[in-house]
Length: 148
Image (cartoon, rainbow, N blue to C red; front, side):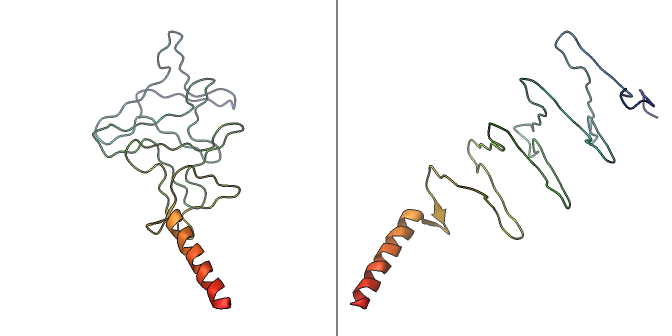
């Protein structure tokens, strides 16, 4: 049995509630070894939820000297990780030294439904788009000569 247990039979009253009016954590979970700090389980609703006005709704980080991941999402038949925004970016990815977004799929690595803007270089199978365009122009010139 857990050291602290809270039970509620009312839909609008949580089993356990924490508050901190001094700016500290309201609820804190920590586990040693391979245990999890906080676990949320739900059959038909959100298992863990974070809401904020000016901060981050949910934050995850991994130690800089480890191989852990900050946030992981797994969906066996649904979406693994989803981001949406009414006015900002739905997903923002930045890496200081690695790849910003790495995608691999069974059908496609990426699907974009709408215009796409690229502000840097585009490389296709190791060849820059500028080289591809030069090759296309050269082929068009050869075809034009052959048509004469």
